[in-house]
Amino acid sequence: MKTSTKSLDWGLTTQRLLAVAALLAIWQVVIWSGTLPSMTPGVAALASSIGAALTSATFWSALAQTMTAAVSGWLIAVAAGTVLGLLIGSVRALDRSTSILIDFGRSFPVLALMPVVIMLLGATAKMETVVVALSCLWPVLVQTIYGARRMDSAVVDTVRIFQIPALLRFRRVLLPSATPFIATGIRISASIAILVAVGVEVLSQTPGIGRQITLAQQDQRWDSAFAYLFFAGLVGWSIASLLNFAEGRILKWNRQTND
Amino acid sequence: MAIQAAPEQVQVATKPLLHVQGLTMSYGAGDSENKILNDLNLEVNDGEFVSIVGPSGVGKTTLLRCLSGLVQPRSGTVSVGGEIINGPHRDLAVVFQDYSRSLLPWMTTLENVAFPLQGRGVGKKERNETAEKNLAAVGLAGQGHKYPWEMSGGMQQRVAIARALAYNAKVLLMDEPFASVDAQTRFDLEDLVIDLQSSLGVTIILVTHDIDEALYLADKVIVLAEKPATVVDVIETGFGDHRDQVDTKADPRFVEARARILHRLRDH
Ligand SMILES: Nc1ncnc2c1ncn2[C@@H]1O[C@H](COP(=O)(O)OP(=O)(O)OP(=O)(O)O)[C@@H](O)[C@H]1O
Ligand SMILES: [Mg+2]
Image (cartoon, rainbow over all chains, first blue to last red; front, side):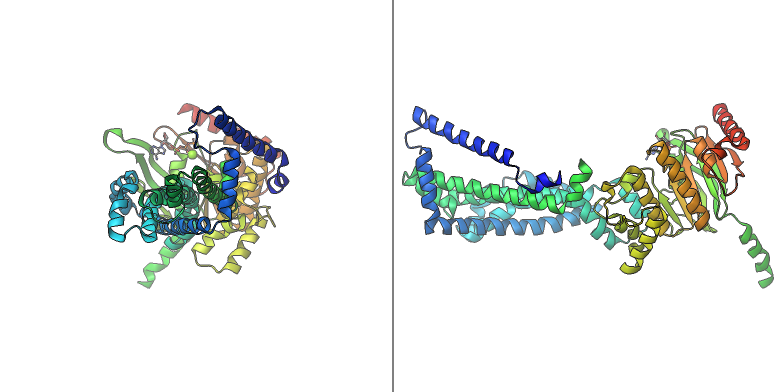
């Protein structure tokens, strides 16, 4: 068991590569069949524009701009959401009094706030970071509150019987028992961060991948538009995989106890 | 004044370590009030091993939660060493029925056992030594680096016992500690607890629905029955310190006591 998780599983890797190849083949067949509008690029055009993007300075600076806004907004949300969530979730009175606000906030379409934030900060990287942070805050906050709130009754009894002091209880019991939920919040919000960052750039023309997609579209450079789309997806996927890996490492006990 | 104090001291020495007087407990209130324990009285002496036996659902866990200060009884008192219990107390440690859930999965076994000591402000080196010593006492020497989920149910229960021992309370309360392990493990754990009790001199109150287990372990068996539950019998077993899973259970006194408890439970 242990060796198979560490070394690469060649059978599975081959299968996955085949799946990707099959998808590309279907794509090409659909292009040839002419059912899609003629400006949709074929596999070869796509591959060459992806290659071209990789060597262009515009692409790399756009990617850097998008990533900077997405990651900083996300980190702000993670820090604020975790601290606030732990506070709210572990203080009964706070939890009760804020629950309406939290429920309202989580169902609020944050993208609709964008015009207001643009009015305040202009179509800048700062504005983009703020909108990303606001969008990412809710999943982290809601998950953290939930995690801090729900402690196993047997654990609660144990902590009481052995008269564990409040600070130690927070650090060694409440925090670890909430971490799986916090981790889920962090993971969900990471994909939201990329999505919102690109979305904001498309809508507000703030510099970044999203703006490049719009520009390519306006120039009828469909192959570049698709190449940028591909990279937006790739970035989201890489971050999600990285977080999954980290979570598996840090929260080994959680995987085990849930088996 | 000094003259009056003298007879009182004599009284203190003969007083039981744990004293339950007129304990009544119910869940809910008003029309939906469900009375579980009715006017319970018990006495447990220092160093004694007492089993409380009763059918499933009679209120054994409820009683243990009252004894441990986790819940407040509706009326009556529990006192330890003359001090009335109105919350968790330094002299009371508990081994819970749900032992696997009561161990913290993010801590190693050693950390779990040392945790109550950490709560008391004992330094890292000292608490780890104490934890290691208590793990050895329950037969888990050198296993402290493992996580609870890497252990079998029986081993987890040993960890829970080690944790309660490390807390070094005067009274150990155990709620059906061996209910969910296989028969052989159960016998091993029963003998372990008997050994620990006689070597450490700790007072143990163990709750179980198993009559044989209650008799085999205890110096005194308290039989709970009826609804709401009350004490219907108290039996001094008198088997002494040495017990054997086969011989003790074949002892005529054992067989007789078992029949007596079965009758008591059937008649109520
Ligand atoms: N928190 C609670 N609220 C309401 N009723 C409860 C609660 N806990 C227990 N009861 C009721 O009290 C009664 C006694 O429960 P208790 O758990 O003390 O029994 P028990 O003797 O420990 O049973 P078992 O052998 O199954 O562990 C049961 O009828 C149960 O439904
Ligand atoms: Mg019970």
